Image 1 (cartoon, rainbow, N blue to C red):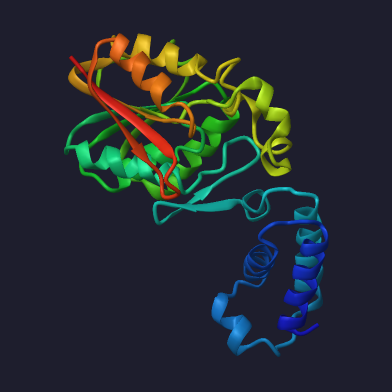
Image 2 (tube, rainbow, N blue to C red):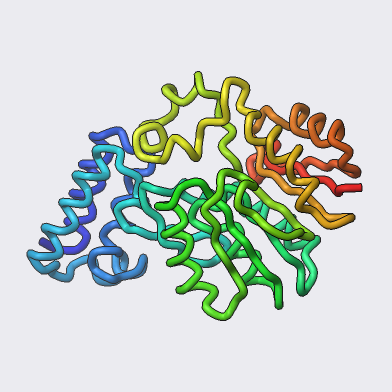
Length: 278
């Protein structure tokens, strides 16, 4: 089959399956299978695609039509200009989280120790290390499967950086003090999870989503315990849900954090809260 015809076939199958970004996903999957780029669709749309590649592509299209996330099919996700390995064992990195990373970078100095709580794929910690000098990173997560993904990403993206991953129930196995603690914890209310889009509800790890009855369970625990692990003047950064700014800011202020600040994401939703331990 010709390259463009194969793409059109894949796109139509995804449209019929109700995939929101059918054209985008169909193109990216074809490029993944054929090792091509976006120009090929315009310039080489009439080239013949090998039968093996055609079969592989249509197989991925059928799986995407079942609402398996695109990133799980390709095994990679771009974040902060870096390509991270992902799987069903980690939360897929999202563009909104780049706002959190960029804000931490504004306050990060060479040689700082950084703790990434609930590290998942390691995308936050490894991005911070990649774009800084001589910092020391520790990533903590309760999921051993997630830590395996994060460790593999560290090898490929930050081979010369000082980074350690710790199997830990929040701070239980964490040692030392840090100038920066950053976290994108589970923050979705338990009652809301069943109503999430299929790609998230059925294919992302629930332990990375479920924040308890009010979505604040992990914020409460991290804010309370972080004071033992922050240096004087150290900073705590969170990603938050769009409706959690007031609650998380209040929790930080009640715990004695100063200059508590909230930031919005690219869509104008509240996304980041941070403050300084005094």
